[in-house]
Image (cartoon, rainbow over all chains, first blue to last red; front, top):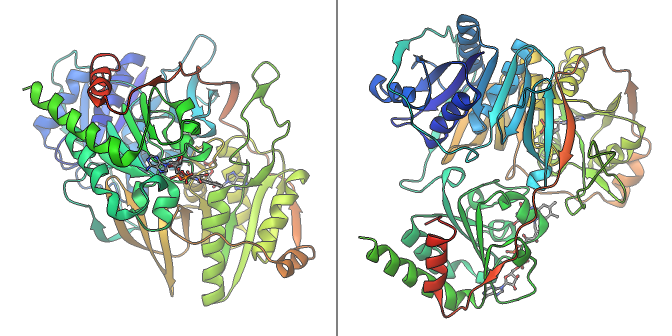
Length: 316
Length: 246
Ligand SMILES: Cc1cc2nc3c(=O)[nH]c(=O)nc-3n(C[C@H](O)[C@H](O)[C@H](O)COP(=O)(O)OP(=O)(O)OC[C@H]3O[C@@H](n4cnc5c(N)ncnc54)[C@H](O)[C@@H]3O)c2cc1C
Ligand SMILES: Nc1ncnc2c1ncn2[C@@H]1O[C@H](COP(=O)(O)O)[C@@H](O)[C@H]1O
């Protein structure tokens, strides 16, 4: 099978880029990567270690414009005879993959968590009902598109570097003009974070978030919050996780002073390990937790931070 | 300005998720359907605010069967002018989007708004598919939307930040949190909704590209391990040695 994997890069390769190439190599076939963004040839060549046979790069296309990227990938799919196109289910894919699905009349599977089962057709497991269930989706079209949920596959380097070729994607004019980009310096973007410390209304007020941030910085974690906390303006909106906020699946999710409402769980139940800190032993969150601490966050968080610092120091 | 807002139904966010018919069907027993929160809170309300300041009309469209008229009336009660129901059980996102695109082709909308995603299938597919079918630009997951003449200005999420972008109308926008505040319909709205026009149109002949063949529930979590609040060293040790996450 000819497989085309799309990635967008900044200077370095994101973990999600390595995940999708690893995923493609698990499916097996001729794997070509089509890349946009700033990463140089030497960086892109490393994708060979994860299973890519070749990288095509067009640095003129901007990931901001879904129409440009759609034209680029459609052309690359045509050139390589791709039957399967793979994305990481990120913000770019959410705009581009559906467009490509219509353009190529290729069935789209969003939020895949496993490799396709081809024993009887082409069936892929996805998360549905905001992570409260899974579904098996069959694709009936000849061409197919999969958008892989981040953090579903660990990147695995097995091979050697591959060739990188400039590719003219004939992307045309951009219809979307970028006026301004605001990225907080240094902060770990929530959807990519492997460790997350989150807090809710139990923290009583924004002035108490210092202890949440202290634990996050001791761990090297991102911070998140429940919806009411963002709604009342204690924390910025982009930290709101849950059904109506960001859905995340970090390796570790620590929740302090969050009750564990079903709508909150919907955004975090894909986390590998959940730690809950709550004064109320009956808080529903404990049912979804791996480790629980019944206690006052104001007392537990600083102790937790101290223990993490001690552990980190002992590791050196 | 002519605005089209795509409305879908979703199970109430507290619904128990279960399956019947050998795990092939979602179990609707006791499930209350609501307007998908992203469609109602953000797309519809921001559309209404734009209509109120700039003038024009706001139409809602739903691909659904007669039972879905309850959610259509709710959207009309919140303030939409009229509604269109494309009469079929919604199939995959491709089919739904092509049905909406077929309808939109003959109606010259300036702005087509959708929610960020449906909270049952979480696909985030329909908006992009409509945009491609109509050859229009798409701004996905916008958290702010303003229109000035023929130009729309939006703020949207990007990985690790936000971005301000501009595009010309006509345009498709999928709407995420931040765009507007939820509106509760008042008595006058509810009364008015009863007599607002609701047109039922026959679906076009369009294929599906995907279908759900089975569902399941995630494996149950093993029991939570409780840690003494005065022994955080133990918690850290467990996270390192047992869970292997730090
Ligand atoms: C349609 C819909 C969508 C929604 N979407 C989301 C969503 O995306 N994300 C989301 O988070 N919510 C969402 N909600 C809201 C959700 O239902 C809950 O109301 C919300 O998650 C509660 O936030 P909380 O846990 O911070 O606050 P509370 O429910 O007030 O819980 C506070 C918790 O802190 C504990 N506590 C108090 N003091 C302390 C202390 N000193 N130390 C430790 N613990 C303490 C309490 O025991 C309690 O469990 C949604 C609701 C609806 C209807
Ligand atoms: N059956 C439907 N009828 C009308 N609009 C829909 C329908 N299904 C989805 N949509 C719209 O498309 C958006 C994204 O849906 P999805 O691609 O399924 O996540 C929703 O928020 C709605 O605005």
